[in-house]
Image (cartoon, rainbow, N blue to C red; front, side, top):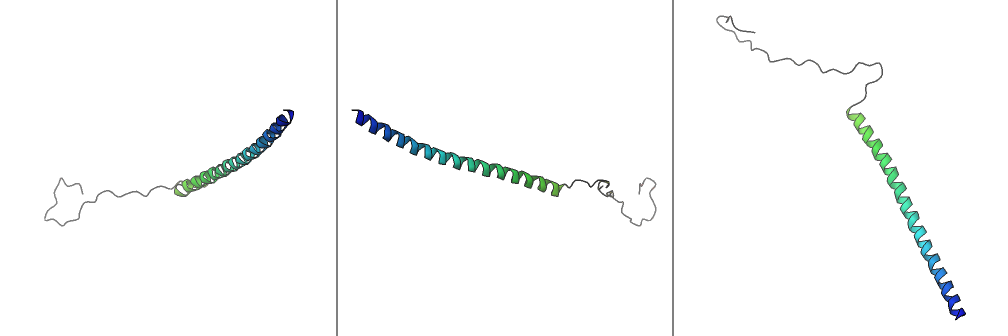
Amino acid sequence: MAQNLMVWLIERRVLLEERAAQLRKQLADTEAEVARLGAAEVVYQQYQEEDAEARHPAPRPGSRPWKRPPVAGPRCPRVPSARPEPSASC
């Protein structure tokens, strides 16, 4: 009986050691994936910031902001007429 108990204890210890080794490997793989995803987040965030700056560049210090040139309104056609109309706004 004592011999059977000793065999069971050794087998159980070996089994648990193997399982612990597998779990350590899985944990290392999971931690490596977490690290890769963290690095990917940083890279993607930098890409988004650079893309946003490329579309809307920040003004340089001391520079004046760009202003849109004035848009001309609708022009009155220059049509020769026989006599000018007094109410014409053009």
